[in-house]
Length: 438
Image (cartoon, rainbow, N blue to C red; front, side):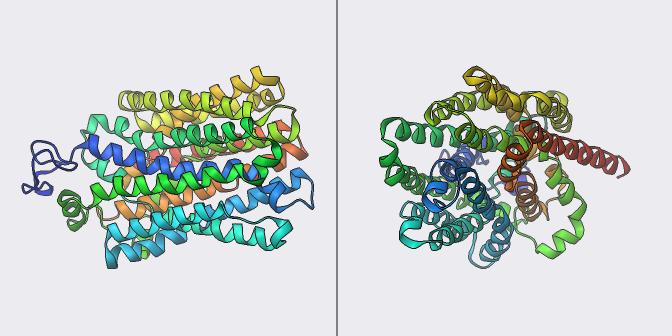
């Protein structure tokens, strides 16, 4: 961190500062991990319920496959709403401060998620129940846009250049941790309750837990963003939200490339989390709780792979790792989906290999191209890039993969994953050419 961005008025050892008054990366990392874990926990609780609960609760008038496809359509609404949430909450940030923005956004996220626990079924409210869930899902999406706190950027600004890959992977750890906690909770309720009790009230408890986790995450993040050091960075415009139209005009090329560069990892993200659960539940005789345990096991491999991505990125380069990862995902797409029809052994191999590839690529997906953004546009451009990347790469992935696989076969789902890998390789190549010209 440059000396002019470091305060001398902080108490030694208090808050996220070290003995020399500098912002401590370790403290920031804790806030980042807690924050991302809460967001991904909410994400996976909804995703799992979209397979196991919502088709039965909201769409009992149709078959299970169609009901699941409708649920995945509602699932996508959050990704559509997320960019609008960023725009709304950036205005809140400019007018009322980041602490207010985060507080409102996380209470909206936790409130929307907790409200889902009280969702009535089709038998009570008719199609209005699905409409109500859609409204709450949009609330989640708007809140996720507002939950962008810039802590990952602050972390990147405060680490040695030869350690940027290591610290870039830290925010991504929230994904497998959130998956493990969400899958573990659902596995417990599915395994210990009768089907009637689970569908009546058991599935609602994880949504209550989500609100509690969001409150913890809120305080962990506020502890950092309200410190004088973080405020000084904000005032020096390194992490200040810039006007959106100006940012898009100046950085549109990097934003587009940044949105498409991680498509391989984001498509794989849902191909090893949401989609396989739907396939196993709909087209095999596997007990859902068993596959949720497999997801938990694979999640630990994902954590290890994300950590390894930090070391590999610092040694060989983040863009190189992302490109190699996309090529490996392309190979994986050609044979792996068929393993989901090969019993528990095939499922375990599919999930573990998939999570290793996911961890190696997803671990660096957020930092590879966003590193091109300058100080004035870093905060806004990074937020917009993240929103668009999730929309293009992940928003419709479960719906598209399940629809293709159910109509054509698992090989078609692999083709969908292959398309993401090809787009990632193209985006990285274009980015390399642009960098070489500048």
